[in-house]
Amino acid sequence: MELKLKPLKASALALCLLAAACTAQYRNHGYMPPEEDIANVIVGVDTRESVSETLGTPTAGGVLTDGGFYYVRSQFKTVGPFRPQETTRELLAVTFNANGTVANIERFGLEDGQVVTLSRRVTDNGLNNISFIRQLLGNLGNFDPSAILQ
Image 1: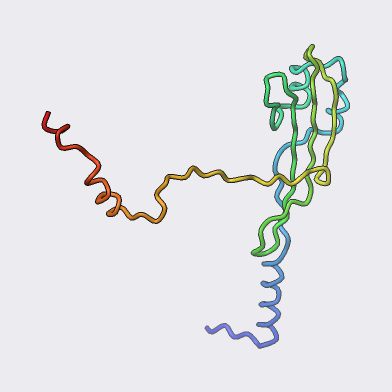
Image 2: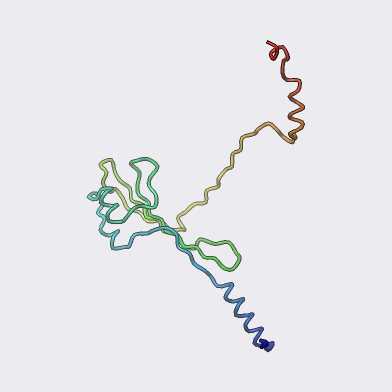
């Protein structure tokens, strides 16, 4: 039994497949505590332990042991073969004072971010365009035969 499609049906099927391939796909990354839990954190009263219990484990911590807690959630959109683009980012920063109690709770979004260019530092090995054979032949005159005989 042969499957025969009329040209109109075949083009409609191809169009549906093309539209399905270009549908946007969303991916969530990270964790943001619910609003009710954030409202339960009291500035000046709660400690690191109580914040961890109320909000959960932070996505990241401060560089120092006394640094703050950071909860980050991002959403990425991918359309067809194109690279994913970050559409939303939420950051909740909980900072602590010297006593270990909550000093401040701040929120940041994607619009608050700044682009940081990373510099790639490479150590120069001093072997610019020198082949392996040339390196071997270049070392022939760099040793003293009297050092081997002694």
